Length: 166
Image 1 (cartoon, rainbow, N blue to C red):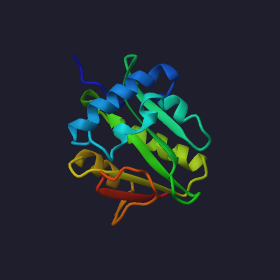
Image 2: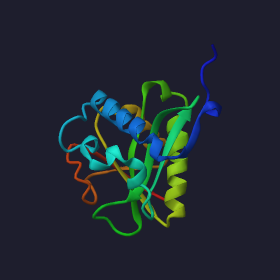
Image 3: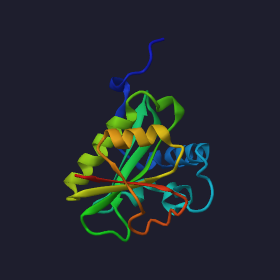
């Protein structure tokens, strides 16, 4: 059986029927990287209703799908406690079977395009030491490390911060 390629992946806006799959993905992937306790996005109330949370103005969330199954997602929203020109890349997680296929790069392009369309000039993100593949993706796509967190995300468990001009 041939390996899946980026051509077999579909990036599309989240729908309400994707909410349970995305909640399960987030709750599966985050603990894999030690992000299961307090201070992490796994505990955000929106995890169970992502489609509704990202239906607000200047918000967007996308899922990656292959063969009809949701394998991950990612989105953007205004940075809580940040300026009006800054968004946050949020909840970008993929199941192991989606990794190494180019899904991260495709999702990043889609999210950054949505951020520009929403009028943002900067994109911020926070992550955790040990998410090495994710950090390589961030740096490859123009994010630069910054020394301290921005805004008021409530994710005090994160210890690595990035910013990118759009």
